[in-house]
Image: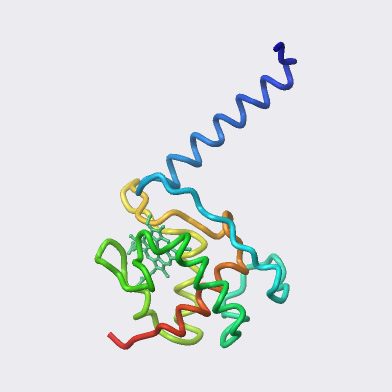
Amino acid sequence: MRLSLSQRVLAAAVLLASASIGSQLFAHGNVTPQPVDTTALPEIGDAWLQHNPYRGNAKAAEIGESAFGQNCARCHGLEAISGGIAPDLRYLELGDSGDEWFIMRYQHGSSHDGKVYMPPLGEVLGQKAGWAIRTWLETKHTDG
Ligand code: HEC
């Protein structure tokens, strides 16, 4: 099969993009982020909110539980009970100040000295999925 020039340029761009996303996201193991279906939740727009618009919403908690299992549990532990690789998210503060810390990490992840400890997930999974996970986490809250 012969590819046109534009097809070849496109193929090269796709390869490059997947290589660089790969090295950022998969530093802790080869697990692809799993898309989360949030169509059942109210729209909240594109601008990032600082406080959880779904707090106490049972549907959001249900979606968040499964999204957490697929995207966060491998580092933060099943049921959010940490095995020690990453912080135990049951201890995150409840309410608005916990929300702000949560969404900052979710959006931007965490790196020090050029090493990725947690990949940024906001772009990949979206804001609705983030707040759904936060809603579920609040139902698991434990005092440290
Ligand atoms: C590759 C492993 C990894 C994955 C996947 C991961 N995290 Fe993290 N997360 C970490 C590590 C490590 C830290 C600690 C970072 C630090 O202190 O610099 C952290 C920190 C956090 C914090 C701050 C906790 C605190 O007490 O300061 C939150 C909130 C968080 N992660 C949420 C999530 C959510 C939600 C997901 C899934 C959508 C997720 N993380 C996926 C490794 C991961």
